[in-house]
Length: 161
Image 1 (cartoon, helix red, strand yellow):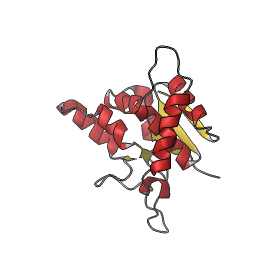
Image 2: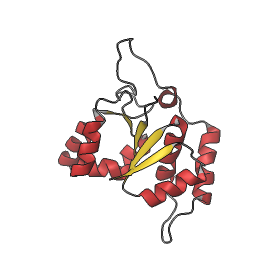
Image 3: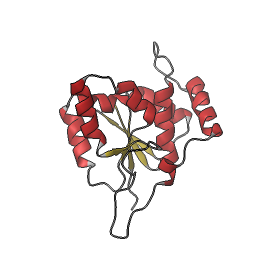
């Protein structure tokens, strides 16, 4: 049995900061998962503002998440009886080909009318695709589904918050 890797988009982080019941319940349910929820750095940057209440709420949520390649972030995998493992996808930065795939997805994604391509959403989709079996927690499932389709994602699920 494989465990799905949780990946948060900007909407999930905003919902956690706003203490939305569904987002908090889902986040709390992931605290025992072997792989912490993945928050790509640009997602954090989109949400983070210098407002004390917001900083406190996001920082509290981030204790149970990992921000890949960020110093000071919790490791992606929780310690196990056999010791501390690492997640190769979280410790390896996207390469040039990955960034080109993001750009291609921006051009190919069948976004709803009046929507503009969003590089951060495309990066969230790529993060999920790179992890294989993943689940993206999103407030915008139509956009995320379009990016996942552009990446030809085979084993990524969406949960709407």
